[in-house]
Length: 273
Image 1 (cartoon, one colour):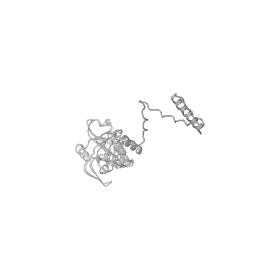
Image 2: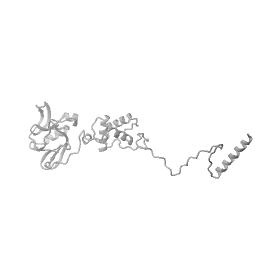
Image 3: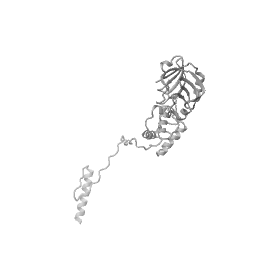
Image 4: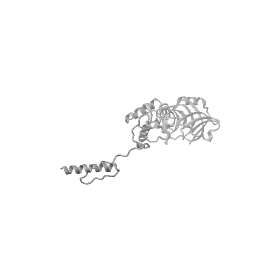
């Protein structure tokens, strides 16, 4: 027993001397176990590994700068609103203005998905929304109107003209090539298409009522047989989800009332793509 104790003390002393000399001590049968290798120290220039992107977890208000905020305006806001409509958090038409209804919709979307209900669109909120929606089409972005007018047809550049583009769904009232008033419009369906070409205003009827369809056609300006430019309460209520029976529908009553006062019988009408 004493002999074994002496041997162990000698071996322990050898380990201490070897470690001090920088040797590598390997264990062998009957010898004391070696210590695990020490963890490498971090250098002063070492940087922690970057967090993986797309985790869906917010990094806090300071780390997440807002993509869109209340008060913002423009195409990006219009896209946000169109995407929020797709997931039924916004029911108003996109207008490109980040107002109270958009803030409320963003907060609702954030709260449903466990995100901070800030009402601002940070990168995490934006990525979540992108993942749940499709890229909005042109007329989805302008479902409520205000789309830019198309380039005028050359026939619209002289005289007094109702210049009506099927491409942009707009009517521009032009005098000698200069736009006086612009409104968004709706046309007939495939079964009852709005005719294209150059026409003239045949007559006007302020309180017209269609006997064929038994429906009011206020501020009607007839240009091609039974087809006319007129106000439509259905267009105002349903937007582009509906269609006319061939007429050119206007949903802004104030604008068509003004237009009705300016247009005269004999003025040119151009309907084009």
